[in-house]
Image (cartoon, rainbow, N blue to C red; front, side):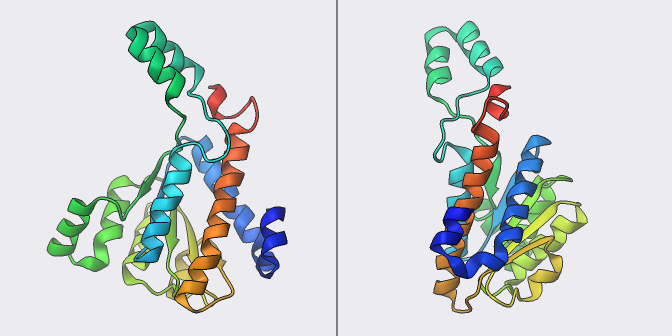
Length: 214
């Protein structure tokens, strides 16, 4: 966090929101939950990027849990040993922009405003987290996803531009960066979600009591 604020002092007012977002996702993972991420256009790419940082090691080694490693080695011989030595512990995360066949089916049958909300209803459980990105804060399909997540008692985190847009009323945690132009908003979103992912990884894998010790 301090590294982020040293590089981006204009984000100091978001310190609490960023920390709260990281803490909420850590709590979600400690409860065995998952993170769903959505956005359109460049924010769709950001959603994929975030999932990539969570589902494999970012900066810290993430060996598989001891029990899984033992099962692989004892039950599957050399192939199991190879898997045990090379696979990494992933943190369950799904980009709601990634499943092209599903998105186009929902868009065709229900309408494009429902492409993310439909997935939230299928994937989401209580205490899971929805991380929703919209530079304007007004993307209808993102707002619908947030509403569906609230209905399922998920934790909702929004990353937006300065105003927060219409989606702010559906976010438990709002990270509204001090820019309005799409490109400039996205330029600030990236270091923030990198910081969140680093905070999560250091908490869960940076000591012997983390997830990877189980």
